[in-house]
Image (cartoon, rainbow, N blue to C red):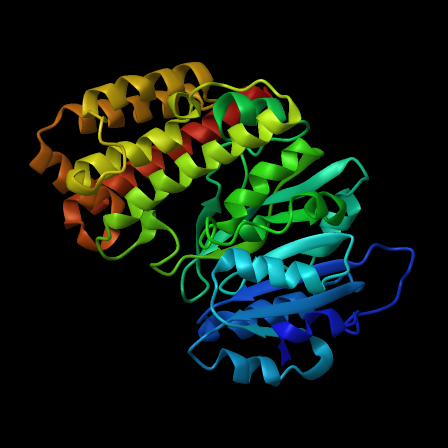
Length: 382
């Protein structure tokens, strides 16, 4: 395995095919203690129908048997071993070695579909900062459990910078749902490693719109693995601290946006958070579940609720049904006494804690939302 100190000596030997007329695509797998998923992730890169690729796997100081798994691949991959430093450091190490014109960062617990790279390359043009696509959510066994981002949330396309600087967020997937322009990444790398030890994709996806357009593919092109530790809505156990972390991450991201915009001479919204209903939802959950550790000491439930209503009705692109249901959620969680709101939030957010009647009610709501979506599409098509 290549050590990080030898990183500049690595050559792009792992190119499947040599079609010089087609762009080289670098798939950078970042891994930390995901040995149980690692082979499926690497194999999905090796099995791409598009052949002009290189596969780099960065092991961020795993304590499991990840490195033994990597050794079995020989020269089919470029393995990079390093001390644990977090996701940003893994992205930086992989990008330093890569040579592709297009870069895909793949979390080691996720995997690509066989035609992912082929479809990205077919859609690519020189004006793009990235191509993004929806993800098929799968559970630990690989069974489908949904789409991410959910269908009610748009994936934005084109020049999304105005949306980003107005709302503090645009429609984008997580790490494995993005393919980036190398030329653009060279303008924003290295990622600050201390600040983005976790959620390094939050840095990248919010920097690239300053340098090019976004193209969105609505079709899911990769699998996003949900296994209890990487998406709060599907956790089996109560971990209230994660909401405070989400709030802090968003606030950090807003500061980064403001700084970048100021450096480049763009006008920005003074308070992104008041226009970002997703962030306000995290804030209300954090405040209600663990007020003693909530990051924003001045927050009050009703004030957050009224701010969220403004964000939903003035700045979101949700349909009427989702605006109404989300508004009801905020007012319910904003006015209920603390013990009741804590109990309901625990049931809603952590499915392993739900009584049977709550689980059935949630399934009913999901079924209604699906029917409304189908009806709306049919109505629009007619």
